[in-house]
Length: 243
Ligand SMILES: [Zn+2]
View (cartoon, rainbow, N blue to C red):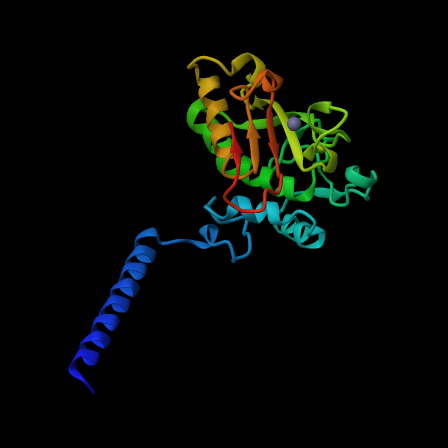
């Protein structure tokens, strides 16, 4: 073999080895867990990671898989019979039983889609409850809502895209009730630096890691009295609206 060929081959090998080393070091530094790897199944006991939001969105349309995951959470709930038609057809709505702490939605009749319930379970367990303890020193007994299902287009317009509410893949959260009797209202407590305002902003920020869309009073006047959370599928796991 000619000497220049050997040198060329060596150079090539060294470059490849360096690239492999860099990838290995990057992997070891980042130490991605299951929650960061989009090809692993969603587990409700994992921390919230880079891939969690995409996995929740991917449960849309996977009724059986989603219900099985919801069963595994220990949540007491009832799957609802399919209802609505066309753009407002819902096959995977669930109603959490009243009085259980895993997902204390109010009113108890609110029936989000199963993937929304999964996102809300994670939000309650890993965001809402820890933030309530840390900032307010109490337990959240109710997540108060304006509802989930509503057969309408966005902003109730006559044309344009359908709202995620039309398939129950959305929830409007208006406030929280605490075990010590306090209430936190998005409308009344959003502004300022009081503990209630800090709590509301913390749970909004945490929702952004779980829902494709999180809109708060910071977004516009239409959201002055609630946090809008939804699972709009924007094609890639990383694209989200967080305002
Ligand atoms: Zn909404």
